[in-house]
Amino acid sequence: MIVLLGANGHIGQGFSRELRGRGETFIPLTQEGLDFSRFEVLFDYLRRVKPDLLINAASYPAFPPEGGCELEGIETLRPEPVSPQTVAKACLLTKTPWAHVASGSVYSGAKIFDNAKLRIITDVTRPEVLSAYAAHPDNFLGFTEKDAPNFKPQNGQAAALNLGATQDTAYIWRFRMTFSEDWEPWNLLWQLHHASHVHDAINSVSHLGDCVRACLDLWERRAPYGVYNVTNPGPVTHQQILSELHRTAKPRPRGRCPIGSEIVQPLSPPVRSNCILDVSKLLWAGVKIRPAMEALRHALKHAPKTRATNITRVVFSK
Ligand SMILES: NC(=O)c1ccc[n+]([C@@H]2O[C@H](COP(=O)([O-])OP(=O)(O)OC[C@H]3O[C@@H](n4cnc5c(N)ncnc54)[C@H](OP(=O)(O)O)[C@@H]3O)[C@@H](O)[C@H]2O)c1
Image (cartoon, rainbow, N blue to C red):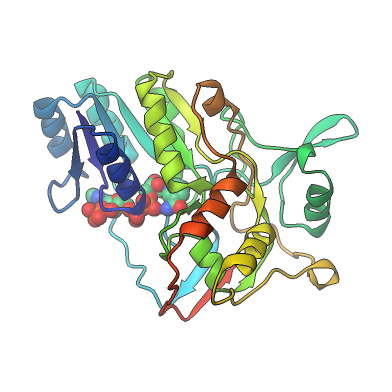
């Protein structure tokens, strides 16, 4: 039996759906039902219930969204997050295997083959980098789980970063900007559709359904514990997504990426994480997952036809 923390959150809901679909017995916990942010409460609960796995999708809400956009006209008040350290300690002491849904936004940039050498570029929003990617996408590689983070984590992701080293019965599942068929503000496709300004960038992205499936497959296959980048293979640019939106969406998206000479050279270093993650470890574990572009096209095809919103403005910042 599985215990799911943060079952009301959008990633938590993704896990609930998939677990239900698999006919898996699980207990979806919300903070209303049990104050699991308190160590003694969670510790007692785990001692009594003895789950086979705890999934923590509750700790550090990714809102404002991971995609680096700002939404105006939406409530962003948030409760204090659940500390992953509290969950880690309760799981360690009760010998409960567990998984922490974390963020891959701890890197900035990508690795690029240049003159037969692999080097790191830290800003994948720069025009010359975007042009190089358009010309030779295969020259671009992502950060692996072994690479040290090079981007200051937001909120409390720093705490989650150290978990992998201290836990030998834990998965750290690193998602990135999520999208799906659901037409809601947390969805990257929704955000780009409603954006009035979009800065182009190269990114790894996570289809919610595919990625929760991949995580549960890791668990079912009894893949070794540790950190896993969980995104669809193959990076995409905001420009590519916008082109798909322009091709398929009605009404048409509000904004577009500046192109060619319209691109203003960024003056400051990136304030958001834009990065490529390497998912070889996930694939080597035997997990099957669609390429990002295929998942994006599928999501757009199956998104609801009515795409109304009361959000006043979305700005995709660098
Ligand atoms: N969203 C993304 O695109 C994305 C991408 C990469 C990584 N992630 C990671 O995925 C995890 C979940 O993100 P999310 O986007 O699903 O967040 P979310 O929609 O805001 O949901 C977070 C859930 O955590 C629960 N929670 C927050 N503080 C709590 C507290 N003090 N006590 C108990 N429960 C609490 C809330 O539960 P209640 O509903 O019961 O209040 C909420 O449902 C985060 O670690 C985030 O960094 C998200």
